Length: 370
Image 1 (spheres, rainbow, N blue to C red):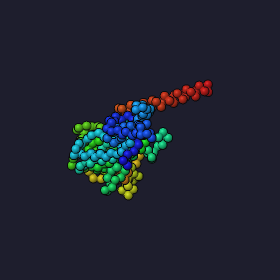
Image 2: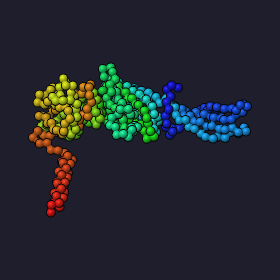
Image 3: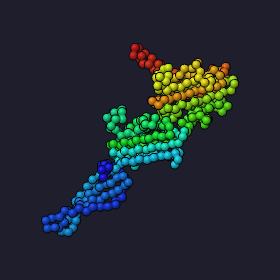
Image 4: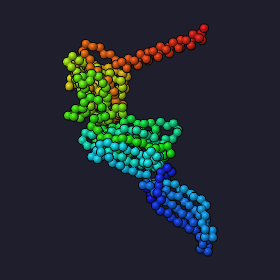
């Protein structure tokens, strides 16, 4: 019983499995007061309800019913192996009803070989005091841990009601720890889909199985498209290297337009600074023409000198970053890059909006001084 904790979720269905009768008698050994304790049960919780009866002339009359509440162990541990299923769904206790207070759960994932564990969040609502606190200290939370050199290292902490971005492990193992301290009737917890993947969450290009993480983009298959860092739009996993190969025809070059870029590191992105980086090359080997890219950057463009281009992304085992997303386009060597129609349309709209705003301000000023 030392594991039992008091909790208050009265929406859960229970079934009665036992009751206890307590009778207090008078001096002449006749029953004066009788109390029934009904015990109801559901997997990890006991519900106690007290019914008290006065006994007069041999007849019992209920005078009150007192609900003592729930006693819950509220502990859970689940293991998921890719040997059993490559994908599935995970939910917090009693989802979509509120999870009990003092809930403590561990969820462990075990893949094989090159597999990575990827988590996609579909619903997330944890209890958080309405004090405007921005951090996750002393509140209900969900944490993700990965294995780094034989030790568990925390990579993500989630709390509140914002839907988390996808999470990916740095290897075949990952662990989640859920601590639901408080709960409330609105705290429905979370719903997550998990999968054991070998494509690193990269859905474009053609994967080359002979490399740990490599994808090829041929102009013969598509002259334009997008590519992104592993696990995009979630943070990229630690200790990961992915290569993107672009092959055009002999008269083509490759143009890359990075629309999002957030890779942990400081220029010049060298190993001594513990920086993650993105590197470009016109060859299979390194290319001195291009330096390494890291840090937070606005939109930028990179262009190859010829029909082949290689992009290498490398993360270490220290920090996580947002990653990147880019558009690629195969152009004739003599052609100049032109933004796609949708980009030009949005740019034109922003210019038009600016002109309208300037005109409105000018009209107001004219009215003030005339």
